[in-house]
Length: 339
Ligand code: KG4
Ligand code: ZN
Image (cartoon, rainbow, N blue to C red):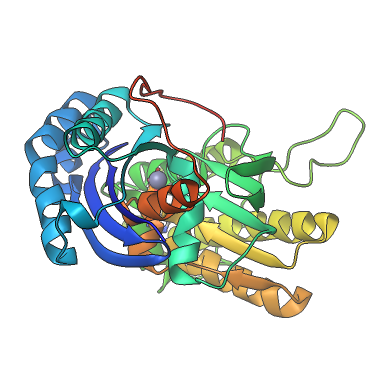
């Protein structure tokens, strides 16, 4: 059993949490979305400065809400990669400093491993092996989870990540940042068949398509052309609900097709989903239908654990600490690193 104080500052959430193995004792997320919204995206320097100003409060709140003092904490964890380096450094430095001062083991955690571990918080009976569909603002990956720290990436995006595609398509439709939740909301009242869009298959030199890799830049360009054409045709206002529903259904269909192909090829019957786009209602519906059609167990974390948070980092760290792993204080932040 390991009780972890965890910190996550890889992007635009200043998050701290206390987790005991697969149980969340507290989960504090201070979002910077409103601060970055006027810029239409995240400004890295602004994100770092805001983490510096907010992280102390998030950590104190996480410890207070868990009702625990430092004697009850077995280890301190922070996200060390991938992400915005300046932003990562704030959480990493705070985590290492707290670990040194309180003489606790320190664990640097890969952000994507955290997104995978959000599923253990939601479904404590989950055990490897299983397939994880990781869909966030920066990644779209199909990962064969074999055990703690044992991951094989079977498929990934060749260009835009799923969340990035949602955000870019929202922007070209004149919607706010981040676009994913806004498109999701608009899609509820739209017709998913209103506009046929390309799923974005990757052609192979030997013919056919790559079964697990995806591409979303072609889909984004198709929406751009469609929006331009609607404007030239004088369609005003734009049918944003139908556009959102058609785009969302295309992404959901494309991802679900790859999940089913991958699970069947590798003989995996459990699929765990993680990352911000795992909150998407269209993706959830498509995967739940695929679960029924193909006899799969599909797991989703609750919405609060899909987007960035520190509880998922704490859960991964607890598992690593229980296995006797820990990181050195020389560990640095890296903007990119494979899982
Ligand atoms: O995992 P996350 O919080 O941060 C990264 O690690 O990137 O994911 C953020 C991404 C954003 O692109 C956001 O638009 C998308 O997740 N997102 C959604 C939804 N909620 C968040 N995309 C589609 N539907 C949603 N409901
Ligand atoms: Zn994330």
